[in-house]
Length: 179
Image (cartoon, rainbow, N blue to C red):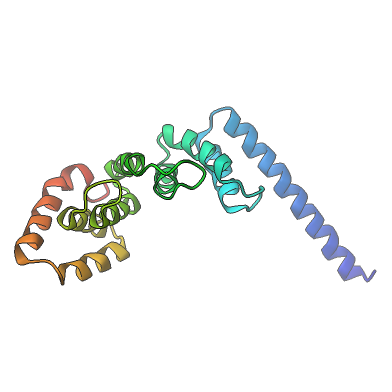
């Protein structure tokens, strides 16, 4: 074997060994209750990067992290409930987790609440409510929320647009711009 090829094989083998060790380390931390490690482990199972892809195992670890207030985990748990990934589909549970993250001023959760309200997933369809959430998410820098809001307003009456703006303004104290 040529020296360069041998070197590359050794480097790759060492890299994979480190990745396996780091997953074991993450799992130990996760089992001890570390929310960040629980989130990382859940993402590894969700993506199949660093662990075998396993949606149920991903949900288990992400839920543990979410229950400790990890905002990114709250978003992922909500999405998993909304789509029935690794858990039985439960749109009302998705709404609850999105609301929890939205209260922590998470624009992704606010955007997803806009989608669910606008389309009527987990709640009665309500375009005004959806646009109010998109307004808040857009105020927090979510570009797609701003785009959805603009598109939705083209089909809404002026009264609906004003209602959505008033509702968003009312909610800004609790869900508004990041502090």
